[in-house]
Amino acid sequence: MDTTGFFDYPTEPSQPAEHGLPGFLSGRGEEDWAMLLDHSETRLFAPGEVILRQGEQDRALYLLVTGWVKAPSGVVHPITTLGESAFLSGAPRTVSIEAMSEGEMLRLSFDGFEALAARNPALGRDILLDLGRILSARLHATGETTPGWTG
Image (tube, rainbow, N blue to C red; front, side, top):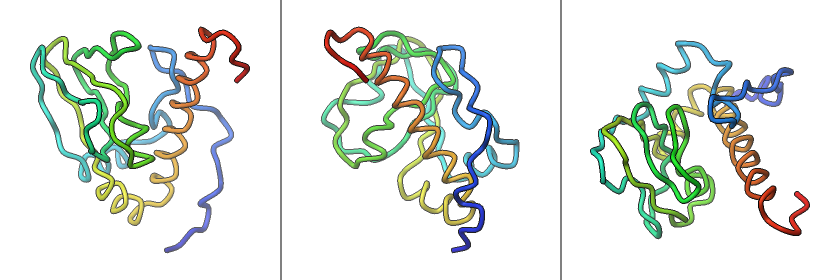
């Protein structure tokens, strides 16, 4: 695997998304999004459907494309990633997420991610960096409401 430029990080931070979290792959072009789509599967959901279940063993990353879902932290809007922790750690899902409307999401399995990263290491790196930024932002948001947390 050619790792030339693997650690050439972008100098500009990701732009915040509408919901205040760092944007997922906000600096990537159409070709990279097409590659992500090629390695993902589309899932449709209906209101009331549990789309991620606490305790479930599913090492996949989800990207909410359309629709609204409810997580313990509140209502989640598109475009948002879901399931980052289980994707990165391989641990069971930590929360359940329920659809509040009809919608669509992309499911990137861990095997799909590995295949994508083998074909385009820079895109794989940026996916991981963006997931780190998103998890960090969520941790800081949680810490701001947790007494004694110094983050």
